[in-house]
Image 1 (cartoon, helix red, strand yellow):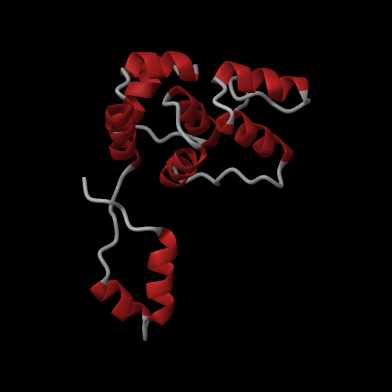
Image 2 (cartoon, helix red, strand yellow; image 1 turned 30 degrees about the vertical axis):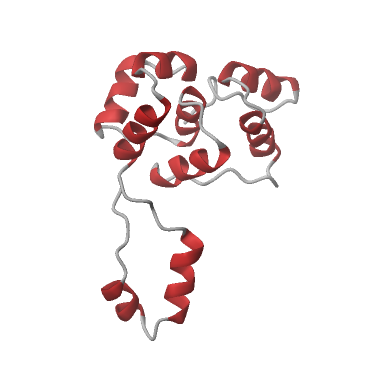
Length: 144
């Protein structure tokens, strides 16, 4: 798979363009689906879907539907999937964008806890323990 261009680089090109039409005509924008990205992460990390679903705390049927593109992930399910895939913060943010959900934001206490857990290699269960300990809704129990 070709290296995806950085958002900052694309933004510079857009701002330097004479018009939006000129930018769109001369810029190849990535057309990636959430399912494509999930498969890419699975392959790169050499994981099995069943292990990802177990580690994420996601129902197998729901997980398979997300991987096939039949269902989209809501924000908390996308975060849970990121934990199951052992994603970095950057990978998690991209997964959230592709799921059509807002990225994690360090100014929001719950998001800050999740960011900390991702950056420190914690599991989804450990993250839920931290969220609970600090009085925030856990990922597994939250309505998505």
